[in-house]
Amino acid sequence: MESNLSQDCLTSRNSGSICYKITVPHGPDLIAHGNILDHEYIIEQESWKIAEVSKKWFRVRDTYGIEIGPGQDDILLLTMTVVIDQMSHD
Image (cartoon, rainbow, N blue to C red; front, top):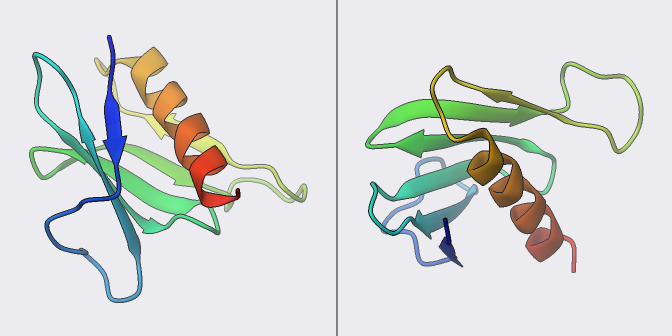
């Protein structure tokens, strides 16, 4: 499943946050928004939170976790997180 990751969000959900719109062929688009640079953001599908990326669960520097909701496409969401990380830190 391919995704077209673009920084063209319709609106930013939080003041000062970064927002990515992810176009998913044959499925609803996804929105990743929050503090992307600090790894504190959520991923939504049709206004429902389907995943959360956070460092709050860890004390080790440069470590973050991804909590993925049940029944979601784990591979797509993990891949999105890696791509967003690479785009945000280059």
